[in-house]
Image (cartoon, rainbow, N blue to C red):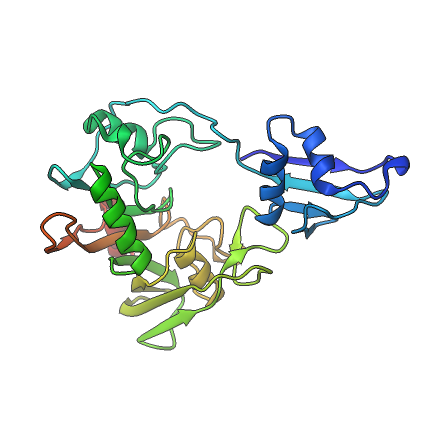
Length: 304
């Protein structure tokens, strides 16, 4: 994800529109793409988010922008092993490992799940956008666990509609810092782009979107708590943001964790999507899948 910074120092151009100024300097982007980036809260003037493309610049303004490159990669099949839990002619359920990006983008142009899907399921490249073949939902790169992918257009549309209507049931296991005051509860805090860092999500945002996370305590350790977490909405980094905002960051979270809560007990983010349930697009029967914690996370529990 490119990040660029500029300083507006031409007094003769004071009052110039922000979108025009950035359009002249980001040659890889069109004017409309620049405007979209600004509206998506990825442009900053003097460390403050600016949401209007028509913002007028003043002498000395410091400008920063974070953005994705359009059509940055041509996707192709890669022979990457996959843990395929289930498959039929309509869909497949994958147990994604930690460290694997779901689909390509800036900073992850190859070795993604999408590349692997094209190798294992010929023809899936015709299902959905070319850079996201068969993909109907995502899991964070650093998290692991269950994903359902579509193998034909009908299944793709049906599964997307299920996610839209929130009839898909997803549950995670997460190890968090500290002890929760309640045995179970609901975190209902809107999430949006961080006001000063567009690469992060936050409950402190100028453009909030509803987000709801349910949690239940499974086991308490000396310094940690193992939770079962269910997401009702599907915002970017939702679980990580909500747990951090509640005072219980996920162990191993380098982005939303806290400096004083560093630990070497886990080699990765302790977040695993262990349960997935949805209605089969063809048979209309309810499907349920579970996978155990990966070895490296199970070893953490045994250690503490």
